[in-house]
Length: 86
Image 1 (cartoon, rainbow, N blue to C red):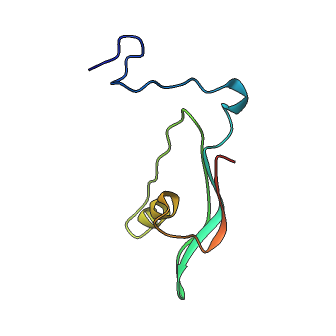
Image 2 (tube, rainbow, N blue to C red; image 1 turned 90 degrees about the horizontal axis):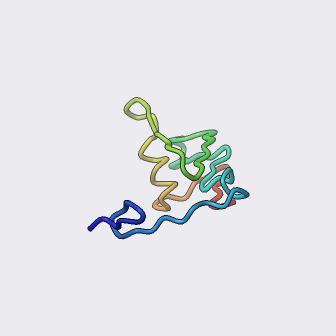
């Protein structure tokens, strides 16, 4: 059922305070992943900000799935930084 006040299906979405509106939710700096001597990702920089749409796009074998597994916590990155909420 849609909530008449928010237009959502039961979820109430809080407004983001102006001070935090530009602070990244997720950020990767020079992140990479190696499996032994196989380098799957290297030097990935990514910033995901609140209220913005991000896309992971690339050819087969480019490392999209590996990147998503790092962001979701399924795999640990082996180089660089992975920041969540600062």
